[in-house]
Image (cartoon, rainbow, N blue to C red; front, top):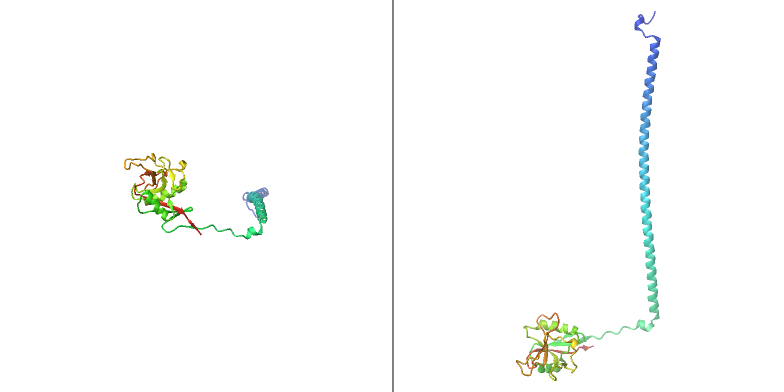
Length: 262
């Protein structure tokens, strides 16, 4: 008995074969799609790997170049150090040669100590001299006598540096404008011919007269002004503060003598 009683409702042999072919075609397409997706995934993975390898290669080359540069810099520094070492070696050799030329006596002989100089209390030392700045007021001749009694004489100024020292000291001790100090300079022997107490003439290139001084003013004393004094309160910036005054005026004074040695 036939399985399909109604021939019109049962598929024919050709229809069945067609359906089977379509099924096989669909399976093939799906397989190809899957294969294509897998291939795409593999290509993407390969691209990532290639990128990473390329980047790593770039970084490696960059680091290698940096190492090369550092190595070159170190090589140059080493060369400079070698040159410096060679220069020091030559210098040391020269010094040793100089030392070897000295006799053994010269090497062991001690350097003589410099003689120590001192001044008495109340005297100020400067260079090889001691200076006494009085607190009392005397005439020029009286002042010189007191200085001689102390084994000294009125100060004789022989340099700008000494003038600067004295000007600074006097400027601090003065209490009013005319509170000046006698120095060892006078033209009492011959007007206009200024001599120090040792009779040596004043060196005009080392004179420190104030402006129009000396002017030998005679208003207060007919004999004029034949003795020099110095000073300005606070000190003088240009050092030019010598004045001629009557030798009979009472002033403070500066004594000078050589410092003691030993």
